[in-house]
Length: 185
Length: 185
Image 1 (cartoon, chains in turn blue, cyan):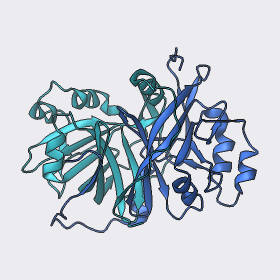
Image 2 (image 1 turned 120 degrees about the vertical axis):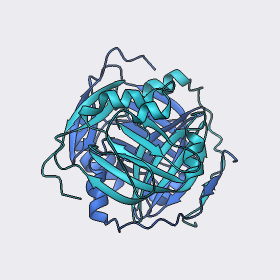
Image 3 (image 1 turned 90 degrees about the vertical axis):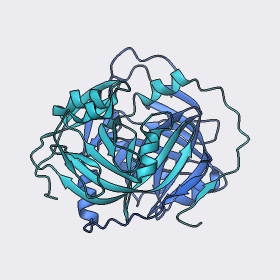
Image 4 (image 1 turned 135 degrees about the vertical axis):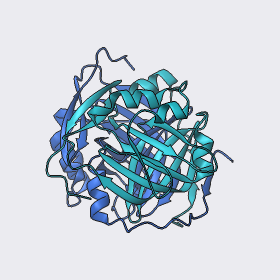
């Protein structure tokens, strides 16, 4: 199987009861997840939003994935710019997570909150994030309502002072202690 | 853009310093994640392993993704069987997580631990898991060393008695309280 391609498997014949959106969302609320801000800037405009659907994929080459709803108004900007900045949040960022999760707040107003630096890709990175990843978007796989962005990590910074990380679980924030020392990036 | 296809974006010209495996792994240790067992059975054989690289993707149709290392000896079984059972672990499952994470333990020996039921796909599901998802593997996207399996969720069960979920963060287990009541699946 080629390693950069998508394979569609044949449909299985097994039939199962209908899984409702509510049931699926309730189950997914019990899958712990990090809380990150994803940002982009370039010809498609500057955008940012809060995301929990993110996962490490491979360390060779360093790759993470982020799931974006295609109906989100920032979606096209990420695709046009081809770059993404990822800032992993810690417990001091509850309010920032809420601001960037709002669909009614304009990008300029969002970025007025928090302290930002610019990554080499042009994406904004949160100065006091637990971890920042500056990435190119290498590939996109669409599934249902979402696009999964495969992000090639070009640079990393780690905040060695942070004592806790932030998780989203059971529709609430939770604080997770960092085992020190964190190796300096 | 077609919604079942993969798009490869043109390479960006931006150059960045080399990101080492160590640096990437250190950063990823600070991305909180759930702990799940993934299992499969069928013509490719019965296999199971512990995974943290899992994310919700879309509720229409209900889809999750799981990242599997292609070098893992169980990898081909998942592809051949085309089905996957996902059991989300809770704090009573530390030992089970360790057993299924071992590369030296044979499948039969792994499944001697824990109490199991069979999903309609034929995959084993942990009886006292926080959540179980019985899935077809609908598509595969390869990235670096890993295959990302896109899993169509055919049925869900939720354990309404569990009071805590399990997270993996900073190379350790953490217990996250469930906000009750959990809706019955």
